[in-house]
Amino acid sequence: MLDRMRAFASTFVARILIGVLIVGLSVWGISNVFVNLASTTVGRVGDQEISSREFQRAYISQVNAYAQQTGVVPTTEEARNLGIPAAVIQQLAASAALDGLAEGSGMGASETLIARKVAEDPNFSGAIGGFDAERFNSLLRQNGWTEAEYLGEQAGAVRREQLAQSLFIGLPPPQAMQHLVRRYQGDTRTIEYFTVNTTNIEAIPAATEDELAAYLGEHQAQYRTVETRTIGALVLTPEVYAGSLDIAEAEISAEYERTAAQYARPATRTIATLALPATATVSWFNLGLSAGKSFSTLLEESGLGEKVEELGTLAKDQIADAALADAAFGLEADEYGVLEGADGARAIYVSAADPGGQQSFEAVRDQVRAELALDRARDGMSEVIDQIEEARAALTPIADIAGRYGLTVAQATVDRTGGGLETVEALPEGARPQVAVAVFAADPDRLIPSIPLGSSATVWFDIVGADPARDLSLDEAREGLVAGWSAEKTEAALRVRAEELAARVVGGEPIADVAFELGAFSQISSPIGRGGDGLSISPSVAEQAFAGGLGHAGSARSAEGDYMVFSVTDIQPADPLGGDPGIEAALADALSQSVYGQFIARLVGDAGLRINDQVLNDILTNVIGTQ
Image (tube, rainbow, N blue to C red; front, side):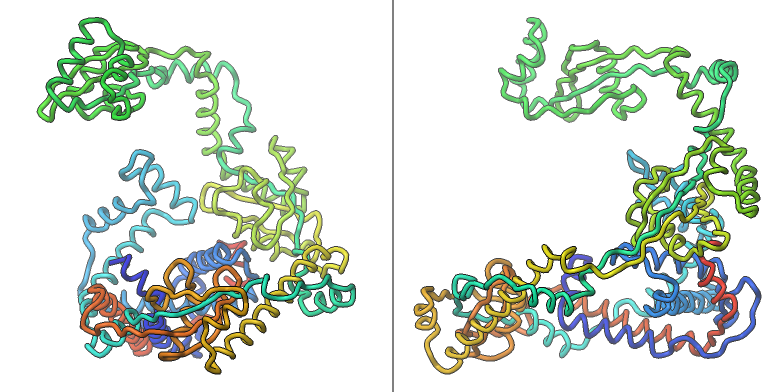
């Protein structure tokens, strides 16, 4: 179903339906009624509140998503112009309205259902699959959620999903709509065509200085430096703070004695298995085992080397198959055996064997020290953060603060996309867009606020340099200008030449004769749809071919940058009753979404959306410092 929806989403009809949905959601806009609500409330829909924390979290998420998609982190003013705050308000208002309806209808979400939803979320899966509680808690901290907040949001999502499914899933699309879509997707054209490329135009002469200067003037926006700021950043995480702590040797030794049991290394085997497909093969391996032949020799003789499955190095309790575990741990390094079972026989080979045992203090000293320091760092983090904030309030430079605690200041030259922050090694994954927003929102002449990144990381920084964006001179941009000017002139010459040749075909000359004069041969395509054929006929060429009927001729740019001159030689309409059976389901989904959007708009309109403009503006102005 998802594959069908993705395919359908690229079609013309899908774009129309999505447009209807967008209009349905946008007609009500954001209410002009601004009221004074609680200082922690951004808005209210009926009796449902939109908290400042909810808005702040959703707003930052949308800004980060925009930055990841475009490579540009918008300023607060740019975000306003892009409509990001308005879109977030609409999203939260819709959820609040649905929550109100769900509560009024007595609709709930069981703890069992919510727990299953969380457990099945792949974002919380561990390295070997399955729900990982430690990863769950870590991701919540990184994103500024408490467990109660997250589970509450999931409960709301479940209620909203149940409500939407019960009211709108399964609306049947009209037959006329299905017929139109099937025709649109299934009609084909056959074209006769030839290609016009750079061999068919005169060579483009080198650009003069005046031409390059004129081209630079017309395209100056493409030839600019990127605005950057150079910062000294201090990132404090439990791991960073732990690395600065002095732990006495006696403490490390005492901790090892206290926790020695956890440093006992289990016995392991490095195991490979081979399914033995026939009785004769089983006998062959048993005879080889009795004769003292090596496992590699038997593999070579039997020709089954490619069938060996490497299981890796495992402790006994990591092997789910008890019979296999017993067999493997009954072998030593470079030994093998044959294991009979209900599913057939297997050869079990152990390439390495580790007996395990207690690890010495010297072997695990650094690990013990690191874990002891990390525990101490976690306990002392809040106090250190308070002390650093006090020092910052006294306008103490970041470098001086870092020196007090044995920490390191990382210098980075940052652009608005977060580029350059990769040199700040301790910065948590995914935090670059958020930090970049703060860097470019900061006033170097005022106290720069810290950046809390969830509950486990905080960043402070000083701005030590700034380079505003500027226009490149002709000499600085010369290489790019020459390439850009040449490409533009070449493309223009190709377009003019293709249009001249296409005009002759439109005028009645056989396309084969026009191609022959050019030193080319025309070709007949296979039947193509509106997306081309995935090979020589690109979507842009197919779009022009579908712009007319039989005999329609023209030219279009191909995917390779050349031009094709074509003439439509055959049209095959699709069967409006046949084709992809998934179209009906895709249209039903799209129709349900459209009606759902209109329903939400009416629901919010009836409940009334009230916005606390003061809190909203405060968040947008200080979002980095207060999140």
